[in-house]
Length: 103
Image (cartoon, rainbow, N blue to C red; front, side, top):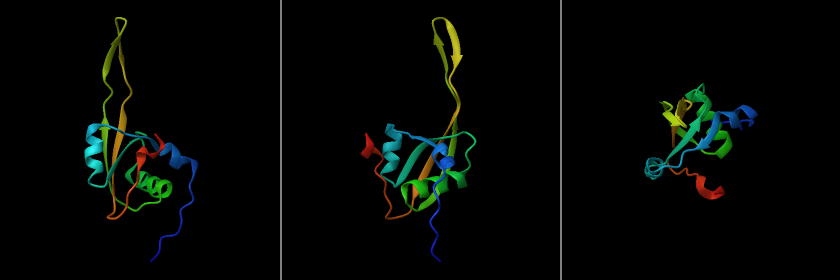
C-alpha cells in the first residue's frame, strides 16, 4: 500500500528547530540516525511526520530526550537557559540525509 504525499505545512517547520551538530550526533549519524532540536511540546508522531515530509525519507523510529537548561552567571547575576528537547530520528535502511550540505 503506497503512502500518499503529505502536504508540507508551516507547523512542520516549527516542530524541527535545528539540527544538533556535536561529536555524539556525528557518531550516531554513522548508524543512520539524525539528531534535531525540536519544540518541547512536539510529540514523536509530529516529529516523524515533519522529517518524512521535509526531507523525503522513511523514518524507522523517533526517540526524544528532554534537556534541562543550565544555570549561568553573567555580571554577578544568575540566570537560567531554557529547557529544550532533543530528538534522535532513525532512518530506514538505504535512506540518508546530508545535513551539512547547507553549511
